[in-house]
Length: 141
Image (cartoon, rainbow, N blue to C red; front, side, top):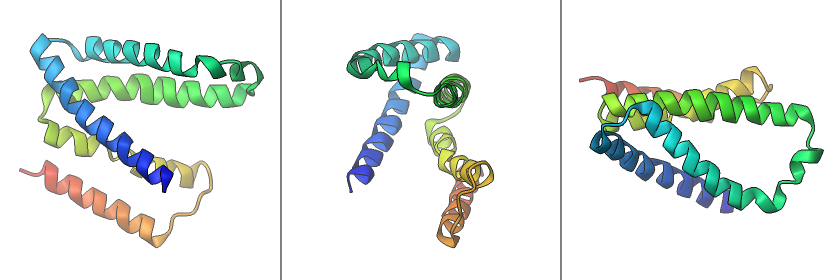
């Protein structure tokens, strides 16, 4: 139950945060790159303070684990994903961008299946299909 609550808080933070990010980009006339860099800088400061007590874990973590976080979280999600998200926010209505951008579970489930050998149940596949239907409905005019 705790994981579900944390996931809901995550969804609320990202959803409401996206609203303020879009408003900030437009109000300041900021490029997506500047907005993304500001967001990442503030996140780095906050997370640095929160993670400082456990930072020694980096010394004993296997290189493969660190590489996975650096490539997956830093390069793909943290840089490429955020830059594309900000560019989308700058150029399209938030009600279109947010539902599409947050279909990440589709890609995560597919990656887990293809790369990690995790099983996909019929319920997972049905949920993924419904998500795609929702995107089509939102994206069609």
